Every structure is written in structure tokens, then in C-alpha cells.
Length: 40
Image (tube, rainbow, N blue to C red):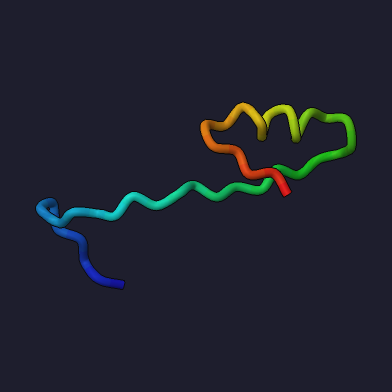
């Protein structure tokens, strides 16, 4: 793992999350409130 310096420009990477829960707990409703949702 390289050492990052304060002057280094870091690439913007997407945030990837997994929502897990019982049926009816609102997972899809929460996921669709994202800026660019991808629900599979």
C-alpha cells in the first residue's frame, strides 16, 4: 500500500454499499433515494 502525500490528487471513486434486512423493512425505498440509484 503506497503512502499518500497531502499534495497527491486522489481519484473520486463511487460508494458501494449493500443493504440487507428482512422483507418489508424499507431497503428498496432507502436505496432509491440515492442520487444515482442502481437497484438490481
